[in-house]
Amino acid sequence: MEWEDRIAAARQAGLRGLELAARSLGGLPLFLAAVLSIALLPLGIGLLLAPRAVAAVRRYADEQRERGRAWSGVRIDRPYRGPAHGLRQVLDPATWRDLLWLILNVPVGTAMGLVPVALSAWAGLGLVIAPVVLTVGTEHQFWSVAVGIGVLAVAVLIAGAPAFLDLHARFSAALLSPPRYALEARVDRLEVTRADALDSGAAELRRIEKDLHDGAQARIAALGMTIGLAEQLIRTDPDKAEALLAEARDTSGQALADLRRLVRGIHPPVLAERGLVEAVRALAVVLPVPTTVLADPGVRAAAPVEAALYFAIAEALANVTKHSGATRAWVNLRARAQNLVVEVGDDGTGGAGIPPAGGLAGVCKRLGAFDGRMAVTSPPGGPTVLAMEVPCGS
Image (tube, rainbow, N blue to C red; front, side, top):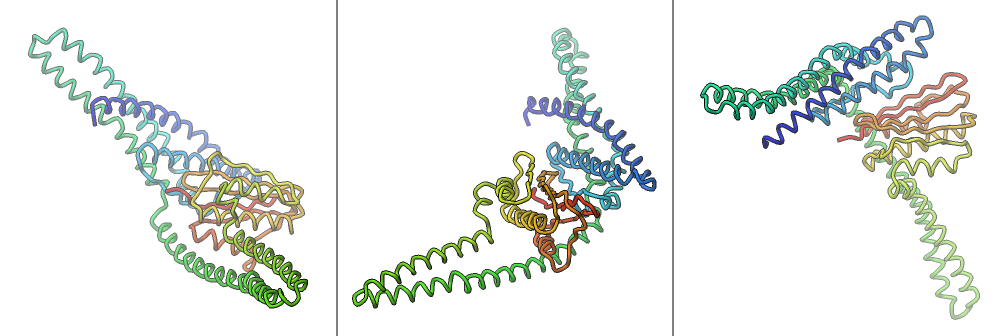
């Protein structure tokens, strides 16, 4: 790395260190609010405050995960058991690790943020003083040695400034990453979801084969027979042949419609052409329940992940239409760290769940193939919120 690049890196480390120190100090009020809201759970008011406070802690931790990746190239995976919604997130062990990191980060993050600021400042001061000393005292050997030592010290300061940001990223990874037992449980879960995905894929192939056999294939076979009869009658009974050809045209249109429906069931064209957000908006437009779709700018994921989420959202909105008695519904799509978080909610009567043989159970298996998770919060009287979270980052 060139000398100018090192200086630029040290200057950038100083600015980032200042930001890190400010954010670390800002985590103290958040920690106190979260602990207080959890302590108020027995009094009832905590039932309302604790989930919101813990969700804010998760967002704060996710911001650090992003900084660790962007500033130091340290990947910090999310360890949570499910989407950040409801009281179950308060009971998640990862929540308590977040709180521990949050309070330890106040002194650690502040110190590791201010050190690069100090190093960059001293290095900058050294770069200003060294040329002056060289100009004034080059005839004295003492000053030459002093300047040489000073230049060496400046080089050390410049090289050391970014290292403290890297050290903080590793400190954060030690507490914010999934622990070993969680990784082992994740491997076990992935083995189960892989088996479910294989079973689901085989069932999907059987469904496609049945739809082709009973639909388009049967119509195309009938089309061939009708055209064959028309060929035989075209000389002897032109009117009858013309009627058969008209019937063949209708049959071909029905076969084409069957194929289009089948293709839409595998991968909707609007999803491939316009992405997940626009596909969901197109889905919401035709619903009888007024539905609002909100999304972070640039929300995208790999094509298989988007397809899985699209069909999951479609199933959830179908349930809203059929069972909820809602007057309005909403879909929120947000990017959180390397994950895509989707919430489908309605103001209906509540009481929803995930029956083992229902469509949402199939959605769970479909998302599980991508290490995704789903949770339903639906108290009697509503509202109902179906939260889904799927990894989509590299």
